[in-house]
Amino acid sequence: MVSLNSVEKTHNVNGQDEVKHKNPRQKFWPFGWWKLMDDFKIGVIPLPLFLIAGMLIFAEVLVTGKLPSEIVVMVVTCAFFGFLCGEIGKRLPIVGKMGAAAICATFIPSALVYYGILPTPVVEATTKFYKDTHILYLYICCIIVGSIMNMDKKTLIQGFLKIFGPMVCGEIVGMLVGVGVGYLLGLSPFETFFFLVLPIMAGGVGEGAIPLSIGYASILGMEQGEALGRVLPIVMLGGLTGIICGGILNRIGKAFPHLTGNGRLLPASEDDQIINKTAKTESVIDVTTFASGVLLAAILYMVGMIGHKVTGIPAPVGMLFAAVLVKLVSGVSPKVLSGSQVVYKFFQTSVTYPILFAVGVAITPWDKIVSAFTVINLIVIVCTVVSLVTTGFFVAKKLGMYPIDAAVISCCQSGQGGTGDVAILTAAERMELMPFAQIATRIGGAINVSVSLLILGNFLV
Image (cartoon, rainbow, N blue to C red; front, side):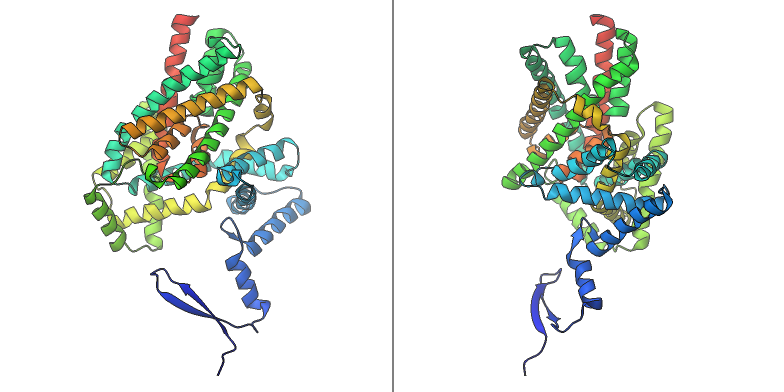
């Protein structure tokens, strides 16, 4: 007798064959609806839920004329727009596989705000939510802690020591190339270095552009607003170039797998591989384990906050050092470590594009970016970033590191601070490198700004 059900053979997680039966007489409800839920998604959101979310957002705006900035509404809003913009980037020909998703998730919202296309209530609510909650810090601390807890000790110790080699060499070469190209294009070395090259490597907006504008105002007698207006667009264009380079490096890594550790800077030792494998085998993930991972990240960030008040070290960097110490002394059990890794995976897959959308709406001024799009500026910026990344690649290879992954860290040296790190690592598909990226942007940027302003104030003016 022939069954009315068609047969489909699939593989389960253990690689074993499973047989599923499909009944051609199944009605749309609920089976067709379930198929829509499972087979069609925008980002991580099932298509039906995505459409419902969009209708609810616009219904709220049309009926009430405003949108609440409370966390429940903002989760839906940022997820809807963030994954929509990311999906557009992923589907673009050619560039869709070179980091366009992260670029679109950040810069499409910025353009929509500037041209008045995104409804004002959505803009106001998103901006208020982002600035009031500092949600980016929660994201970064969960990513950093999860990344560190997933690393072996060899990578932690040797990686943090070795990464400074590619960073320093890349910055020196990048600065020389940038100033040289600017000079060939008719710019003075002073103008090129302090208003083009240095802002690229200054570490973002809060840690880079703003301190630079204050220093320029004090030393050069400029208005701070004028100095910030000249520096800020260059920071953002440098970050955009870094995102594109990160996407290109990801494609190179896929074409030449021997050049990359896919998120690792160094090969793991045999002992660390055994320890990590044992931890993953013995750990049982449940709700309490996940909660422990989130709490561990939050506690370590509070340690970083207190350290900032005492020492002045940025809170994310202080938290990073605290997390490294916890990992090195085996301060938490394998079960909690695995919980941190699940937290990392959750934030990486489900929160990245919503965060980038909020960043694009709240703190990415489209008009300033467009104003910096001159041919000379673009040539100098691209040459500076490419030489920085290329140098990082070859120096890392000489030091026995995975060159693709080390070069991604070099990309982050040109990023827009913490938000730039998120975008670049998303484009490169190597969010595991966030701890090293934070070192590159925050510590590297602070050193560049401090030394350059010291030289400017004491020797050049």
